[in-house]
Figure (cartoon, rainbow, N blue to C red):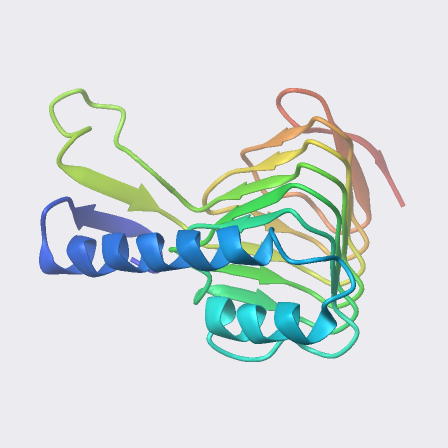
Length: 180
């Protein structure tokens, strides 16, 4: 990982990830305590969380959560509303002009379904969100999903499969409702 593969728990790679999770959690907890108007303080913490400065004209309303941060790629003019979570170890790319509603969750890692492997491995796949996408409040985007340009993910949708460009998906199994 990053990418579509397994990571053995208790491996050196897992240990490095676990250490980064602790650091990212500490940084995001500090970020979420800052006064809203402290732009310089937020910028400095985002640089530590992401490993680089936020792109210009990216707007993120706190609280903001990530477990890793270094694999979260935000393009220009992205808007992220309050209470969003990014489990980004396998990589998340958010394209230009994307709007993300409150309490949206992006998850790039999980565990095998097989009970014998569940506590031995992490699985994962990157998430790719193209340009000009709108993701409604409370949506959940699962590992390995791509969301096409100009798509809309309705509030509360659970996205386990790719979303075609120029489409609206809704429901607990994010089904295409409309295309344009």
